[in-house]
Image 1: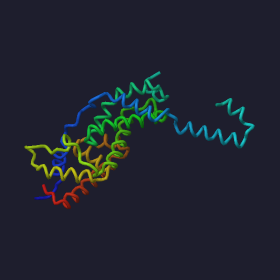
Image 2 (image 1 turned 135 degrees about the vertical axis):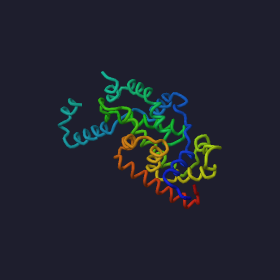
Image 3 (image 1 turned 90 degrees about the vertical axis):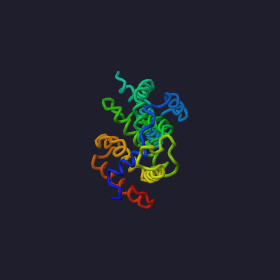
Image 4 (image 1 turned 90 degrees about the horizontal axis):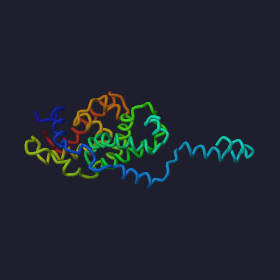
Length: 73
Length: 172
């Protein structure tokens, strides 16, 4: 039968993508990681931004709440 | 305080320790999906960048390796999506086995081309299941789907691949 059975396809794929890729990176990637982190600047999560935004809104709506807000922040 | 707990709190030294401990594992997993060592290195860094950004969501009592593998899989799929049918694989990886292979070089290249034309999520599932022969349970965990979901993706990948090979006139 001249058709792609599951087995023939599997064998063909294995032949087309033989193993051989390096089992580990050729160099330590930590310096690259540090460069990436420095390029992106300090880490500020979305939660931090949300707290800042909520605090700003609260101060605009209720300026009298400022002492309480600063106490808790 | 435990290493994972310190990492979850954003401790850079704890992150570096985990990076050094898991960079090889993450790289090996990625390179098996993308079949490109240079891209796998970049994607390893991308994976750990995503991990670092998500540190607050990590449960200190969780399995860091499994979590990292899942993030790595997503990064690899994103890469496959961008690179889909865009460029040939590096020679040392894409070259069909020779000369004992039953396939000719041309056939191997066409199969590789057809495979890289599959949707990224199908490529990843089929690469891990059919070529790397990873257990379905592990693939499912890495993809964040059920084992049935993995089987469906592999089935669809095979069906699409057969169709593409027929279009290309490639026969066994």
